[in-house]
Amino acid sequence: MILNEENGQLSVEYLLLISFVMIGVIGISIILDENELNTIISSARVGVDEGIAIDGLSVYPKETFDNYLLKNPQLTYPQNIKILKIVKTDIGFDQVHSKKRIQFRVYASSSYLKSSDRNSAGDRINFNIRKAISTTFKTENYSNSLYNPCFSNNYIITTGDVQWI
Image (cartoon, rainbow, N blue to C red; front, side, top):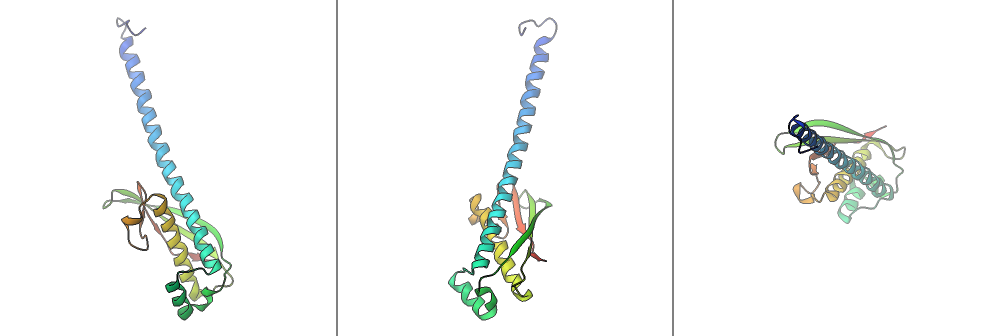
C-alpha cells in the first residue's frame, strides 16, 4: 500500500495522517480548556460553601470578629444563608494579561441578615470564591491579599457583588 506511489497513494495517506493528528491536537486543546473551566467552576462552588460556612457559623479571624462586633454585631451570631444560584459570565479577553476574563455572581437569600450586614456577608463569600480558585491553581501570589482578581492558567476571574433576594 504505502510503497505504491504510482497512483499518488502515498500523498493521500500522508494527508489523512496529518489531518487526523491535527483533529486530535485541536480536540485535546478544547478538552483541556473545558477541563480548566470545570475546575474553576468547582473551585468557585467550594469557595461559596466555605464562605457560607464561615458566615453561617460566624467563624472569623480575630481582627474581623472584633471589627464585626463593633460595626456589624449581627454577623457575630450564626446566620442562615441560602445560595440560590451561581452565574458565570464571560467578560472577554484581557489584553494586559493575555487571558480570558470571567466573572462569578452569587445569588443568595437570608431572612436573618439586615440589609446593612448583607454586604459584609457577601464580601466574605466572594473572598472565599477567589481564594479557593487561587489555591486550586497555586496562584495565591499573583494577586493582592483579597485575591482580586484571581488567576488560573488561562483565565482571570473576578466576582460581582452578591445579589440578595
